[in-house]
Amino acid sequence: MGSEGKKGRRNVQGGIVKSDRMDKTIVVSVERRVPHPLYRRIVTKTSNFVVHDEQNSCTVGDRVSIVETRPLSKRKRWRLLEIITKAS
Image (cartoon, rainbow, N blue to C red; front, side, top):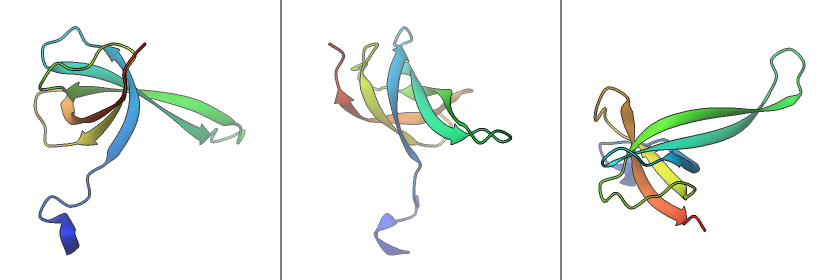
């Protein structure tokens, strides 16, 4: 199994904080570039993830890294891994 232990490989994403109005929770917008299924032109798709932020350390505009985790609530399945850059 290697050095990964029992939890295995967790999905890690990077994005920008869109909302920090909830307590210990942020909403992170993650963009990915994919080819259009028919026309093959590159389009940007956006996904919003509800993320657990234990210390309430993030503000809107921060670039963050998030990691997949067990379900923490109805929509919360991600945890804050690190703040890459703070908003100016």
